[in-house]
Length: 413
Ligand code: ATP
Ligand code: MG
Image 1 (tube, protein in one colour):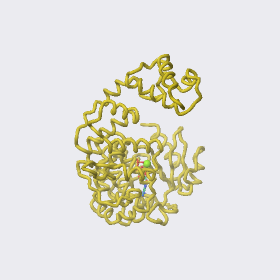
Image 2 (image 1 turned 90 degrees about the horizontal axis):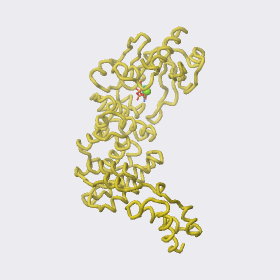
Image 3 (image 1 turned 180 degrees about the horizontal axis):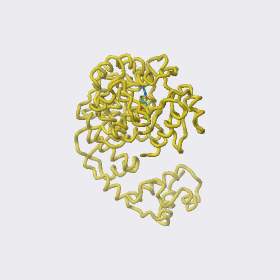
Image 4 (image 1 turned 90 degrees about the vertical axis):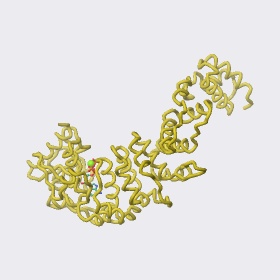
């Protein structure tokens, strides 16, 4: 038994000893029944937030307004939430407020899908009002209650359905699918951050194609910011969709997916960077990821299997091996062609791969030339860098000082 589970069971016991009801609930019950290790353990109870805080010596009022208290038990954080139902929904997004209720059943019925609407007591007995266990057994994502109504309340649930389909390799129930088809325009109101978070979970899952297929077939994707800026119809084949499962990292999956969504056809060559680079900031990626994604997309757009060794090595210097290999792999999947460029061989042939590895720096050059700093300095360093990269000079300080001194002296500023 892992530490979190032990701590969660201890929290259940302490709440019961204090006279309250308490259950494991949601994702951890689902994962437990599937024999998977839950990411975290959530507890639901009829104790009110201030009562929860009285039972445990160490608590953090994380989301006290919504009834959530983080309890620190055996050095582990367990979220404990009072039974609640949601208040009014505005703009098909999260509700503004919540109401505490006294019965577990109401708390379970407000949850999104049957497989997420089960509770488990300390002894391992499952409380299931919605046949969640049957849906778990048959691999079905089905809303609790009428799907249209549940998607109208909170449009994110449509994307969550796709996310769970990917994570669990489940299918979306037919009437739930029809409701996505009907309700997709509500997704216009969702915050990009919530959408990106769900996508991140899809990329980390075993079978992204499983959830992306309904996203595409219903056109839900085109109703979600920032994708809704894309006006044309998507034209993505089944094979291309399935290719998503072939890529293993989140970054590759993002890039391939964005490529499929934003590509255009120019001179029979798929091109994507034009629209995408301008829209990329809307995804709110970190600056590091944004730069990397933009680089790989540009590389794919400009991929040329006829480049010379020198051009290839310059490309490797500019983007580094990892990004170039990633671009090559994605380019091959998109064009269904083989690139056959000896990228790794070229990389190994180059003695250094970054300017910082050069055995001389700007200060050394100032010293040996006696000149004041200016544009010549950068030019000289670049010259030496390329000489070393292409094997014309050894990466040895003395040699580079001599050659740099000569080259730098010849430059005017
Ligand atoms: P994960 O393993 O990815 O954390 P999870 O099922 O725990 O999956 P969470 O987003 O952590 O998902 O939500 C916890 C529980 O809260 C869900 O299992 C579900 O019962 C409920 N829930 C979460 N989001 C919603 C929503 N938008 N509408 C209704 N119920 C929700
Ligand atoms: Mg969770």
